[in-house]
View 1 (cartoon, rainbow, N blue to C red):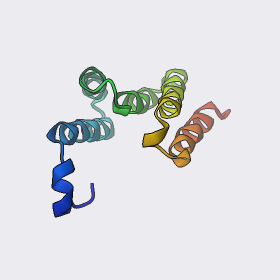
View 2: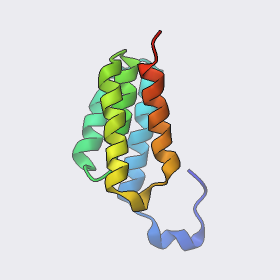
View 3: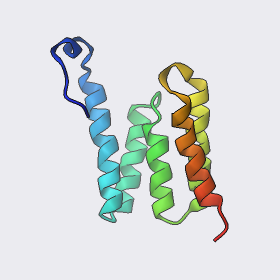
View 4: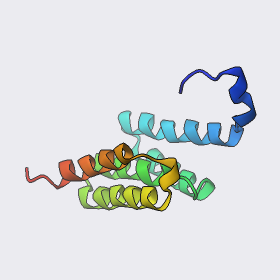
Length: 109
């Protein structure tokens, strides 16, 4: 996260800071092989912040790490649908990241 400027303090939301911390912890849990804990954190993200995409996106990563590619692809598709439903918060590059993940997972081996 970039350093916060003084004029950003009015926009600081401790709840969103907590969201970012929990969301990033999922990646650390995946990397360390704690997939059950990562999945539980994803469920917590979705429960506490249903209007944010983090829970869906991170669950896709957990499913991918578990080798459950079809389910991961479905979650990445949900990310694209979320972006389509909230176009003001995202750019086209955001969707491309998920399209690339889907193509990578659907590629024959």
